[in-house]
Length: 226
Image (cartoon, rainbow, N blue to C red; front, top):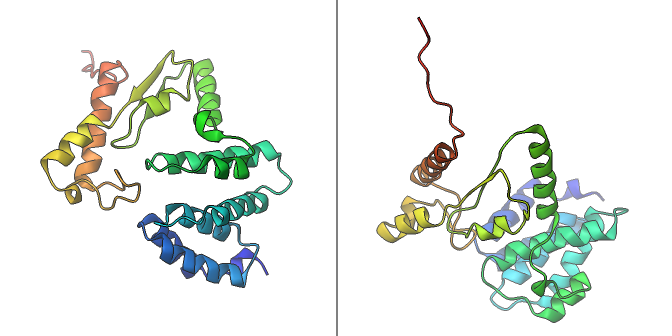
């Protein structure tokens, strides 16, 4: 049986429950899908993530599920690649402010990741992109998610020359303090931020335009000559 035999609707609803902060419901659907197809990599990943998000986390099950997902997704790939992808998952989980026991981190990664910071595939991609753009003479503009500190992005790029870092923390915190969060976000699937409403998108766009203008990256209009 292949992963495609897991109904698309089941996969979509499980993913929705997970993003909506309903990990127990997501886990139930993942188990149903895995009964149909034990090689469903996304199901193992979803089950592992659901257990990390649960009010009563089952860390051993989360460890087994995430590790199995990595094995299925990156079969034949270097072990370092799978580990770095898993670090990325744990890094996103860490942004929620939760703490994963060191024993679980060691069980999943073979090391205590919590003290090493978030150096993962995300960092590798950012550094590769920065080097490529720098060589081509193109400025790199990096923008952080709403409410999150820009330092997380800055830590991924030790060589910051020519890079414009844009934070969306103060602008969103001011807006959230002034009006209901429903005016800014359609959901809060990442606890402090989520998908933006039209007003939230405008906050991002206005901040981007202001920062690019200050950096001299917006060409000035010059009327055509006579």
